[in-house]
Length: 230
Image 1 (cartoon, rainbow, N blue to C red):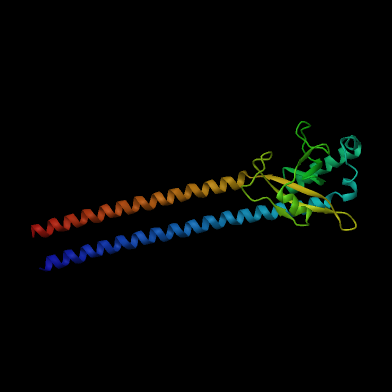
Image 2: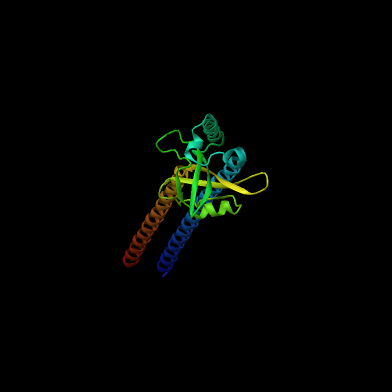
């Protein structure tokens, strides 16, 4: 009788330890997951703040009066325009962005590029280039400094995330928009690393639960065999 009671209590103890072990693993996994997600959010906020501050700086970097000089392709064939592009190259280096550019509302649901820092003559934009107006263009034209959603890309600029700010003239009128672009590589890597770690944690939980369950079953069988022998 004593052996049966002792075996029963010992079996209950094993089950209790197994239950506590599983709970601890689950709690650790939840906390690690929360910390990883918090890290990703902090990085996203940092990127947004960087884009917004760089866009605001670009809006003050070139005056509206200077940008208004360039209305057509013919206006860009001057030393002043090349000097403007060189200033944009220096700005991009200083603020750690890939591209900085300006465009204006051309009407008819389109925006007109004014200038950018793209060094490739084949891909660089000019006032003869018109593109459809986007939702973030409308925000900047209404006076709001904003960014594209992380993970949202236009078909032309896949892999880039952008910040936009309005450019005002001396009378306080919005003349055009300043934009900056950076690569999404760091954020995508962080997201992928988070998903990978989550998969590892879930796998570790399943393996631990399976191993603990098997150990508990084996112990229970041994206890039954011992009890039968006694």
